[in-house]
Image 1 (cartoon, one colour):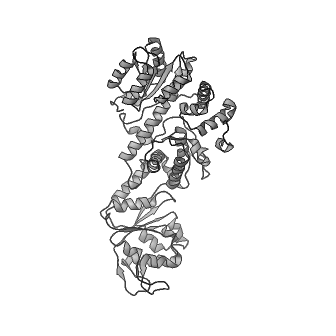
Image 2 (cartoon, rainbow, N blue to C red; image 1 turned 90 degrees about the horizontal axis):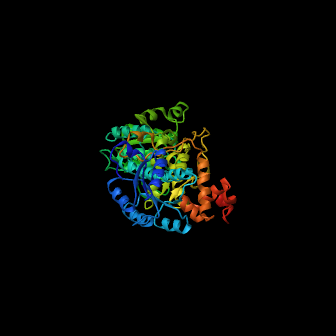
Image 3 (cartoon, one colour; image 1 turned 60 degrees about the vertical axis):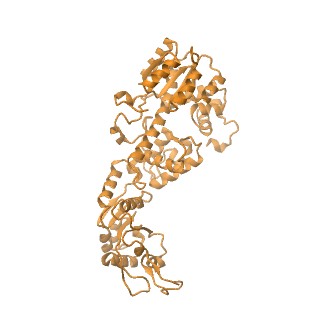
Length: 495
């Protein structure tokens, strides 16, 4: 639904459809107290006509109305506007009616009269939370697609934007660059962006992991060798510097090179030529060198483990790639970037609790660890949503792997990049007002009510609550609802 550019675009829009004015007014009172913009219609026909002129995020409709029943209205709305959440009100409260409505796409149902009235308030808040979650996921996907996805460098935080600005300034030069950053921060992605977005992007890009090269073969790998230079050299082979001629060579973990090889690398950088092993001939190469390390090379040259002259030759321009914990606001965008990679044909939503846990975690493995976490959650999840139970225990419990205290949990609001506050009313997801009500009490009461309404049917309760069966079992055990039993599930399921 597109906004019209005023302040109401930031608020949930609720349409109440009922032929009884007293019920409509009661729902409007509760909805407005929650901060919603409320619309009214006294029949299915008038509601459909209203939806042609005004947008709504969610609908609460009566089941029994003249001319068009609630089920008929629900079916038409879902065909015309499938993204709108529709809940039904009924005075009959039968499970059969609820199942029929849910098969047609209803979010849930609530019985009339509302007793106590708090039940309606909690019902609408829970419904709005799902609307907000869907809108937030879609908003992040759109922003991710339209803004930053430069060779896999995803983010809109100030720190990552500083990196991208420096990449843009260096992309057309041949200046050596030394990239610092912890493992998993994306140093190679930055090097690739610097190469492929520049004037030499059509030339070779050769990546070398200096830490994985066999020490006795490093020289021949980098500079090549002549036939017969050593046992097994049955023919001449071009080195990686020659392979990168005219383009870029990326020396990852350059601090791992032995001192002897550091001297030879320095000569190549100074003379712009290589001498293959076993040859007396020098070969000219025009190669831009981008090096990367997670070590402190300044400290290394001071203690004698890295050549000082090579350090200054490589360190013409320094570029620092921040750790993920230094740009936590990019976490939601990265999560959705990886969801697009590992579940491209699915619309998997991430719950607020799961996203908050991922934003609080310190990620010692940085973006690479986050990617593994998302891939794991996709593989083990239910294919519809990622919740706390789908995350590794250390992340789900808010543990900080670095030993630093985790961030204090915030109020349960939209987990979005703080920089999005300036994005504009017409593009921001709807705002769901939050109160200081104990969220655990609300969750416990909601699960208890649904569990009782479905007479203990866990499969139906899970669908009505929008959570997986495994998650439901954990909640039942936690709140001691229905005896906390999983109904035969293994003890592992309840962990």
